[in-house]
Image (cartoon, rainbow, N blue to C red; front, side):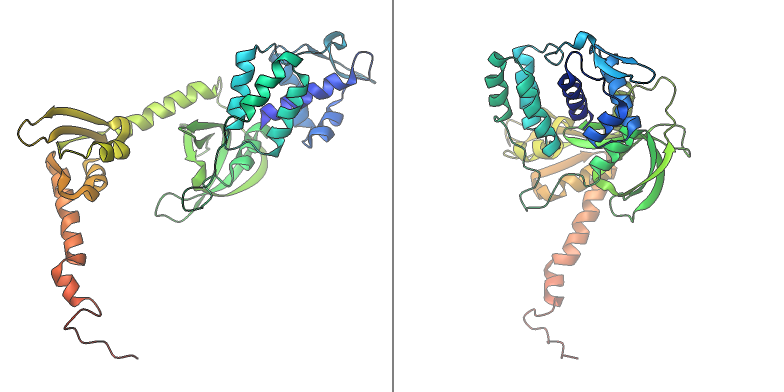
Length: 338
């Protein structure tokens, strides 16, 4: 992660002390195991962020901290330091590099602030596997993050649900996370608008070496707000209304979250009016099918038709007639072995 490298770069500058030789981009690149171009960008990023570093050109030139002075890494106060270490301790992407950077940061803090920082780092943990034991972290996240930092185009394999992977040439511009799920924000030569790619669906990453072409005035936070708003509009394109039996509230909330709204409760039956938004009536109906008769859809007609079709398909596959015809059913002649 770039934050790890910036911390390491600052500590490396500090290690030279007052009167020491300046740090060159080549030396920093070797220390951080990155390219000289990336090291130079990191040094420029420190200066742009207000860290007191300056460069001198020519033979014997390089980068120094102003006056050789040491810094407490941006003057963080105690609550800010605890928040930083708590976040890092629960970061699913925090690997050995992050841990090393945090240990160095602890040593750079004033002594009274160290116990709180260490306690915050131990206060949380993230398990990257689901309950089946499968790894849930995106395999290619680090490669895409590095492509963003290096500013190089990549060719990715990308598989939408139920489809074979397709190759796409993209200009990586940033990584954004929505409720912990990382997405690549990228431009393409084939489409004028920015695109988002769910990184867990990326099947391969090949670095081309060609430089990224960034849209003029691009800002990742602003771009993500626009992309997220478009996605939210698509997710709420259809509204389905119905009624739910008592005791289904937890199931419905687990399925739809903020897309679920309750109406009035029927005094006699206890059933509650519900309203759900989704990409289409058919998608909402499919999500509700598992609740069976505990939810009745009232409108639009497309949702009721979709549920009826799902019910007919399930009945044909699992109903009494299908059970009688199933291999090994009572009264059914066994198929002789070939």
